Image (cartoon, helix red, strand yellow):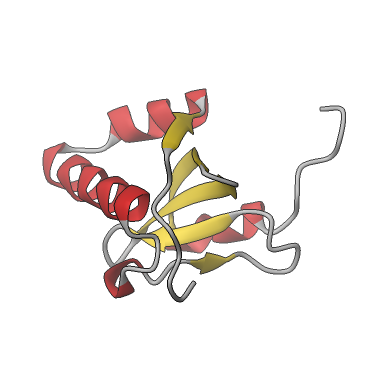
Length: 100
């Protein structure tokens, strides 16, 4: 992402909220820190943020070695989509269909 600007606001999906609440205490603290870093410095090297192939609509950022933050940058708005295990990233490789 290079020298990306900080986001000005964020929104969270119901799926993200549920995933966040399901984390145990230490993982929730790590996720909270990742969201804060992403919001303020999307290019932070510890996040290793990058688009998910093939459509590159959704992005992933590292929370820890196994958990990933799924998001969609919508201009100045950070849209938090989900928290998944690394092995489940593939379900976010395609852009959502229009009209759904």
